[in-house]
Length: 197
Length: 163
Image 1 (cartoon, chains in turn cyan, purple):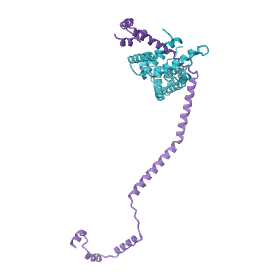
Image 2 (tube, chains in turn blue, cyan):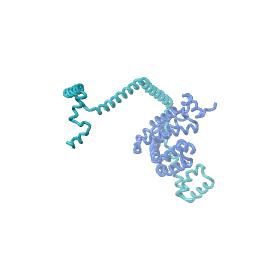
Image 3 (cartoon, rainbow over the protein chains, first blue to last red):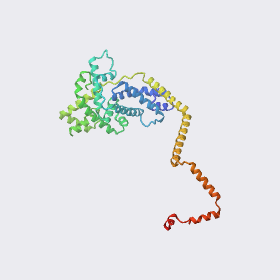
């Protein structure tokens, strides 16, 4: 049986079918929670905000017009919510390493993994988060969407609301800055199983 | 092509997004420029390093939690609407009463401020009675006999000048 598209499911949601919305969530919630997590570095609030994203989508389902991909619309809502959240948290809120570790995501089976590696991965997560946070808003969004969500430039452009060329420029400028800020951690990364290709 | 321009292209270079000419230019430049070679190497290693920031394993109960939240919000919303539905006539009466009170207070103050405080004394009453009696008792001839004190039609100033 052919799988229903997101738009078809959304049409069903519009006519009051909640099971179709459950299916839509099943497809996208992991991506949305992780996307928000790259902005907050806080597991708990990422799930709460993702719930808020889906609630907004659900409440506005009747007004939904399938002009763009459903996922684009979803990421747009998530992006707006993330930016509001980031601004409300204030610029000077920096988490301690303990807090970063506490809020960090699961990193696999701790019994089999090397404890030293686990510590490094948690620490580097906080460092990458801070480096991304220091970028201008649009560079940060473009990098998170391209790098972590693996979205094509065209979709990122629609989400951010700019041209494909502008997205490429944001990614390029952001990468240059990140290279400067993170190059001192390369050695450490390679010692802890980082990809070298 | 300078290093700055090459570095713009360098990041696209491994993705195969460059034209054949751009590819060649980058390759030639990289062979000659140690700084750009180092930049290319570092930027790719940093890009790989970013993969070490793990995502979160999302709780399986996410969807159940979502529907719980929806039903909770619906109940709460229903409760608020119920409250307003029950209180609607009362609110209308209260508003009408408030408007009447406000208008009464405004009108009362308006008329009160225009009125002077007149006290009608016993002496005023006696004067009034005297004038009424005089008016009743006086005849046409009697009235004319009062002309000796006149002339009544001339202004008082004129009269004063003359006298």
